[in-house]
Image (cartoon, rainbow, N blue to C red; front, side, top):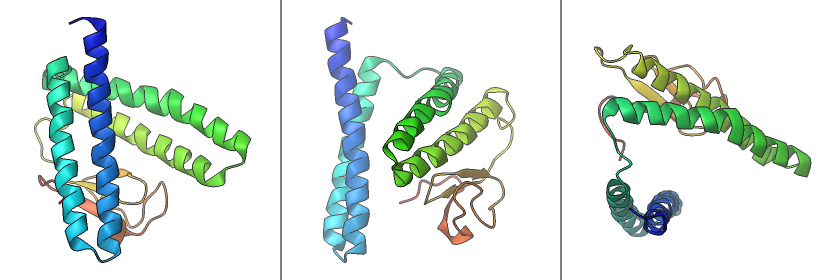
Length: 170
């Protein structure tokens, strides 16, 4: 595949992924404001955008075996946690934006946790067992097997965690 076409597919993938996330956030706002039909519409279109993004990713052939995908995910988390978020934090600090600095700091810490989960998976630690995961709705921290009393990254209480036991939250 030539570079121009690869770039176009990548831009389509990124655009669809960003649209899907944005629409999910919009759906949450609509739900909180008492507009369940608008929330449903945003979620439906977000799902459609996810399909578009997945198709672009498949055409790009950026999907490998599970082991290759784990390795790529581990390397991506390492880059984000070790480089990108530290750079982002410096910018926020220079600008005196405490909210952005906190966001970047907590996100970096959470990404490091993702890195550990992928590393364990690559080493076969979780291959022969079934784990439960709990995700903090405030900062994204992932706890494995045990629901913490509070989030070790942002301090959110236990009721702010979503349980993943083989199901995708809806």
